Image (cartoon, rainbow, N blue to C red; front, side, top):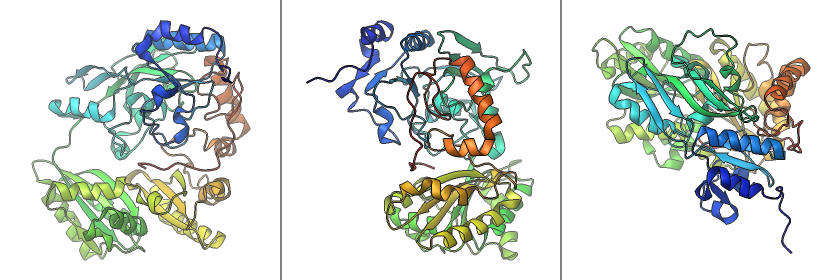
Length: 484
C-alpha cells in the first residue's frame, strides 16, 4: 500500500508553479545527487531549485502557510548537521543561483548569488589580482551562501577575518515572503540596525541568503610553502611569530598538525618524505609571500635559519615543485584519521594563542586519564587559535560525544576561548550551546527567531530546539568528519 504523502494536497503542484518542472526534484530523481558530508542531508526526498530571489521568497511564503519545514542547502559541506533533513520537509537548494553578477576591481567588491562556489569566485577574481580573503579545504563545493550562513572562517581568517568581516551587503528571502535587501558596497554604513548581521552565522534558521556583496583583498603574490617540524607547541608559535615579524615577509597561512596526524595522514596518502614525522611533536605548514620585491623563498629562508639556530625546528621540508607543494596541503586538508579509525568525535574550539599550549597539554592529560584507549589528533589554524580536536579509538565511539565534550570544553570560557569556532552549531552542538550561553542567551536567540520565523519553518531544530510547527531533532550523539 502506498504511503500517504506528508505534504498538503496540491503542495507539489504549487511548488511546480513557482520553480517549474526543472526546478523540482523528488524521490528517485535525487539518487544521483551527492548528499555531501551527512547521509541524511537528502532524507526529505523533496528538493526545489529556485533560479531567482523572487522564487525563493514565494517558496518560503508557501511553506509558512502550509507549516512545512524548510532546509536551505548550498554545497552540503557543513560538519555540524545543519543541512540534515527528514521526510515531510522541503530542501531549497541554491545551486541554480550561481551567477557572479559583478566584480568591481576599483572598489574591491564582488556581488554574487548564494550558489556560487568559493573556487569559482576565486577563479573569476584571479585576473584582477584579487582574492575573496577567505579559504577553505572544501573550496570546490562550499558556496558563498552557505559560508555566510555558517560564518565560515578557514585558513586566512587571521588576516582577513571570518565571513562576518568579508560581507558588506546581503539580500535575504524571509519566511513571510518578503525580501530584505541591504546590498551596500561600502564598509561604513550606519543606516539603522545592521539587520544583515543577524543572518551571518544563523545557519538558515531566520531566512535564506540569496545574494551577497563581499569585500575583496589584493593577492599577496607568489607564495613559498614549507613544512617545519617542531618539538612542542610553544616552538610552533615562536616560529610563526618570527616569520610574521620580518618586514620582507607576508604570512598567508600557518596550519598546525599534531605529529600523529601528520604521520598517519602522510602514510595513508603515500607521501613517504613526511610519513616518518615524530608523533610527539607538531608540524607547522607555513605559506609566505615576499614583500617589497623580495622573493618569498629567500624571505622565508632567512626567518627559518634564525629559528633553527634557536633550536625551535627539528626538521623542515621545502617542496621542490608544485606537485610536492600540493602534497603538503593534501596532508593538512585530507582527513585520513577518519578512514583509518572511523567513527571518531570532532570538536572545533578557539583558544587565545598565549593559552593554547597549556590548554592542549591539559586536555591530553584529561583524555588519557578518562580513557587510556582514546587517541587525540589535532589540526587547526594556529594564527587565530582555532583548533580541531578529534578523539578516536580502535572502534567507533560516536555515541560518546556528550561524554567527551566536557573534557574538551574545560577551561575554555575562563581562558577567553569558544567551544564553537567556525563550523556552526547545527544539531550536533545544541546542548553545548545551551550550557555555554545560558538561559538568558537562549531566550534572546529564541526571541529573535520568533520575529523572523514565527511559524518555526526555517531549518527547524538546528541551532535551537524547535518551537514551531515541526517536531524536534534528537540531540546528536555523534559527529561527521570531512575536510576540516
